[in-house]
Amino acid sequence: MKLTEHLNRSKDTLFSMEILPPLKGQGVSSIYETIDQLKEFNPAFIDVTYHREEYIFKKHPNGLLERKSTKKRPGTVGICAAIKYKYDIEAIPHLICGGFTKEETENALIDLHFLGIDNVLALRGDPIKTERSFVPEPDGHAYSTDLIKQITDMNQGIYLDEELSNPTPSDFCIGVAGYPEKHFEAPNMNSDIKYLKKKIELGADYIVTQMFFNNKHYFNFVDRCRAEGITVPIIPGLKTITSRSQLNVIPRFFHTEIPEELSDAIENCSSKEGVQQVGIEWGVQQAKELIEYGAPCLHYYTMGRAKTTKKILEQVF
Ligand code: FAD
Image 1 (cartoon, rainbow, N blue to C red):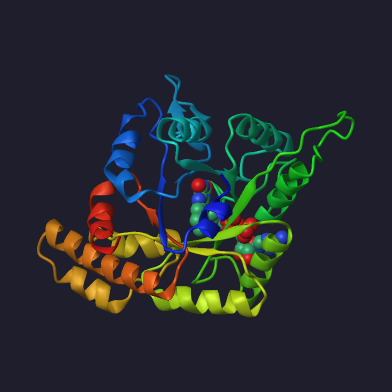
Image 2: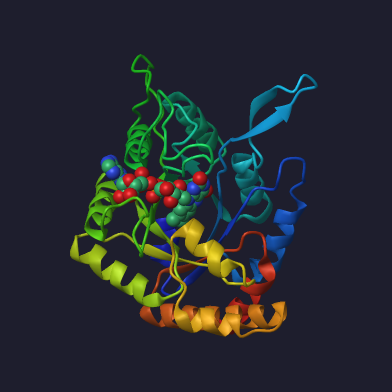
């Protein structure tokens, strides 16, 4: 089912989660363990992230270094299909521009269509570690807007090969990313929202936000989007702080502010359990306020750790 249909049918705020594919060589059981712990809260959908190739260096006996490309977390599409058919829950693959030619994207979309996956989250992806800024594949997409256009074309039966006779249209519901605190490359919020609007005009159906710890960022973001005529559902993305090191890691990687009150409370903790308790209490407050506001769904970046998310959900759903 399309995510937007699911949201339309529900009067209440829903719950959803995001998981990572396991590291290469590990089985799928850790994914099932996470889902098993949270399925009692009826997830509306489960997102599965996509991880680009990374470069590793292998040293040869002659001292020369060989650069090799490897994907440490393959399996996004397979895991989505496994989740959908094991749990009957909508699984949403993240599809990125990085590392894909247009034809590879088309082939991935064909696979997803065959597998009965109805939703995709269309993203650009971050630069790989060895790149200073994002570099598209020679015949790939530079922005999520280009990827969205390819998907909406396919939804109308327009494939890359114009010679196909009577091609079957797909019918994907398309999600995109939104940034309540601005995407780190955008010169300002106006510019970021201008491109977000373009994503919707090109056919995106809903927005999932980057994580935030101060609900005011989400409320202001929704107001600005609505003022610009963006009417699609805006799903808040949430993460629970579980360790002190995240106070530095989260702003560095996700360009998200940690409110003073939260960072002070964490710094005053003398144990890991104490930090987790602060993270849970903060998460409960955030969730209750977002539900009262009428957020369509609370989307949790579980990163495979269900315990703390479960403690929050028990108190709010
Ligand atoms: P875009 O929408 O392409 O935007 C990138 C920048 O360019 C922005 O500053 C925007 O304002 C600007 N822009 C957009 N369109 C245009 C245009 N046509 N012309 C000029 N400028 C433009 N990364 C992964 O690698 N794998 C994942 O699974 C993943 N999941 C994510 C899930 C969510 C909910 C979010 C919020 C992020 C996720 N990311 C993931 C990270 C994401 O790939 C990065 O934040 C990336 O830097 C930007 O992706 P985007 O789709 O927002 O890019």
